Image 1 (tube, rainbow over the protein chains, first blue to last red):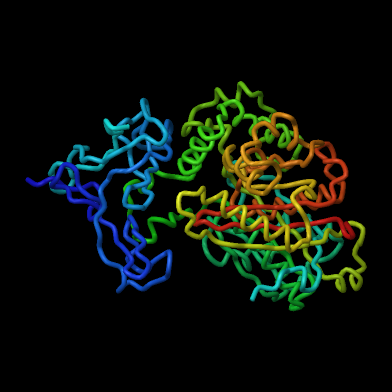
Image 2 (image 1 turned 180 degrees about the horizontal axis):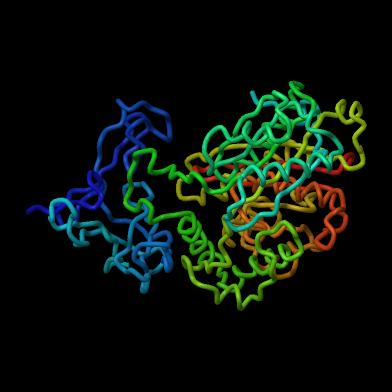
Amino acid sequence: MDAVAAHPGLYDPAVSEPRLRGDRCTACSAAAFPPLRWGCQRCGAPAEQLVEDEFETTGKLLAFATVHRLPRGEVPYTIGEILLDAGPVVRARMASADGSGLRFDARVRGRLVSVGRDEESGAELVDLRFDQTEES
Amino acid sequence: MERPLAELRRVYVVGAGLHPYQRVSETPYLALGVRAVREALADAGITWNEIEAAYTGTAVMPMATSRLMYRHLGATGIPTVQVENASASGSSAFRQACLDVAAGHHDIVLACGVDKPLNVTSPHSATGVTDLVGRLVFPAVHFALLANRFMHDHRIGPEQLASVAVKNHANGARNPNAQRQKERTLQEIVEADPVVSPFTRLQCCPVGEGAAAVVVASEEAIKRAGLDRSRAIAVLSSVARSERDYGTENPDAALTREVVSSALRDAGREPRDLDVVELHDAFTIEELLYVEAMGLCDPGESAAELQRGAFHIGGRVAVNPSGGLLAMGHPIGPTGVGQICEIATQLRGEAGERQHGGARVGLAHMVGVGAVCVAHVLAVDGA
């Protein structure tokens, strides 16, 4: 059975290092993730001028924060703010759940990891986690 | 083209009242709101019959709450409306009241903030736009990301950050309307339960319930109704903006800088003219970010200036003398109106043991998720 994406539509769950599915404005060339779809935030161009685009997950770790306490849900987890080489700034989960070893401005890349089973289909559920890469 | 408030008819705060901020309880919102309004009316020395319109700041209650509350003061038939602008709902209700009077449409208007979490909604999920994190990024996480970057860039340690909460809890301990009225040591703040690094529980504002109300009036109304002119506080400017695309720049600091610089310019003031500032300190880091963005100190100097006592009551400029969101609390709708109550009280010299001596000019600042930002400059008449 094929793997299912924890965030359907935002990446291809079938490849280990997928690209992020966003869009690009043909009027001002601004790249966006998640896709803006209904109109461009930078120049106001309408939906027809936004085209689907895919971005490599490589980028720079601008900031990170580790959540220790939640009313419900699993802790700890660490959120990273990443400036993608393609332009957009995205927030995503870091592979390091407690944030250990993370450094500001480190080079990072996303990859899919197994995060459990899809409740409906029973298929493997995969999601993106970001890691620091060797070059940093 | 925008015409600043200062170019319209002069508006004054003539009355202020509060229902203490508190943990969520069985108290109906009617009881919260009606008490704050009656206090504001008594403070102004007017009756409900003289109020010509009412704006209600509320963000986490069902629709149509205004009329159902105000009828308990007498169903006078005045226009009422709810103003929802996330955490800046109360500030926005106050702004609408000021614009109403400044435009000459009404003479005496009420701005009331009232809330209790009866209908909490999630704005980002309502858009249908999904991202990679969803509800895993809540406000504390958003500000923790900003905090960690800011602390890294300016070499600020966790204890320097926690000092904001020490100051604001000490101020709240002198405020009978504050939800948190207990002084806290640096050690207590730092060692409280961790929520999101670098914030412990006592570096995050409590979200409860409460109400705040202010009466605003024109010069003519003050004369006609024979109100106490010496206690009237002038509203010099009102500015509201929403977030632009700031690239990788800190968006909350950038938005605050835009709004506060406009509010000061419209008021004909400089940052150094401010004696008291109530700002959006939902999390400790925000006070450091915003005092810098407002120009109350040089970039990167906020933690050192706080350490020197610059932002304490009696310091260079008292920041969050009420206790701020961290100690007075953040019941959402009331918060921005409560800031106006505090500034009016300080500028009247009626703040008792938390009085900042010689306070003549004050600024109120709120940020709301979205993001939006609202600021007002108030002054003793003639200051």
